[in-house]
Length: 136
Image (tube, rainbow, N blue to C red; front, side):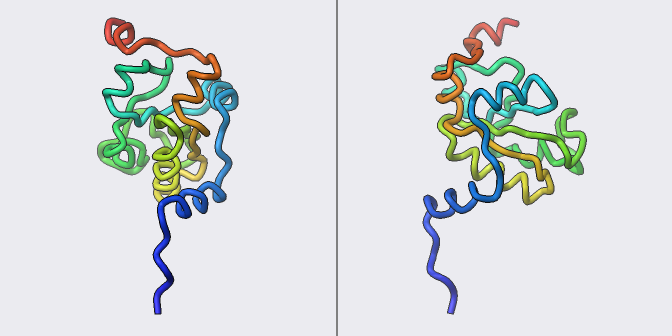
């Protein structure tokens, strides 16, 4: 007999016990060091709310292909399995699932931002309007 199905809330709660999530201030400090901030929000949210300066934008459906150090479609920043990645979604839910997926690829230092982009913005951390970033 198989175990009872697990709902998404229980799954997210369980996954969050497997690594340490970062607060907005911790993520900001990490970005000034060795961490790669990865914004997985979809385009409409980035256009509406802006961008985190220095964060790499990778659509969620491309995340594993872009960050797998062994992948043929990896980003130049995807240099090894020790890469510290901080995944950022809008409110900190999809990023939990994304961080767990990166762990499955061997990126054991992957984490996510508690509260997502909205928490970053509410903390008064740097945000660039998307229209200004497009002009740069």
